[in-house]
Image (cartoon, rainbow, N blue to C red):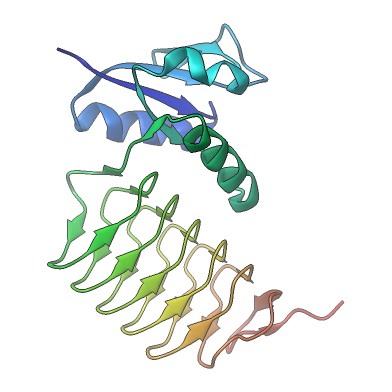
Length: 205
């Protein structure tokens, strides 16, 4: 019996998730996207809008949207309908012992999650990112391509680490932060905001 998946969001991020799903044995994949119905994305049909999701309850779902607030809203709407969320790990990712991954989370190629980490729901651990030992990532966190989190770091909900950002060990980052590309965080971030630079500081407005 074929494994079936519906991917919400037919963007480039969705293409990557479809590739990971195929490598995880999903042979029947469709997209749902309000703006691309009828298109073909990476060989998979955009079968309907997001509101059509209950018609596909024979499938697992994954939300392929980078914006954390939108990803959270859609995933919570799907689960409230009783729909099953998938969790996907690229076969070339490395997952250590005693790591837990919440539903709807995706771990991409070359990513490393070291032992005793807790990764929440709807998280993205992107290509060649790393999360070291004993970290806690709350729901809907996004660790971008090539970003690195050192050991024993806590990251709050919906925080987004930009490409190549680095977080030093034993730190706490509150919810709803945006850490700019290449930023280096060396102290706790207690206020939700955008942080840039080396060392990372709140962006001046």
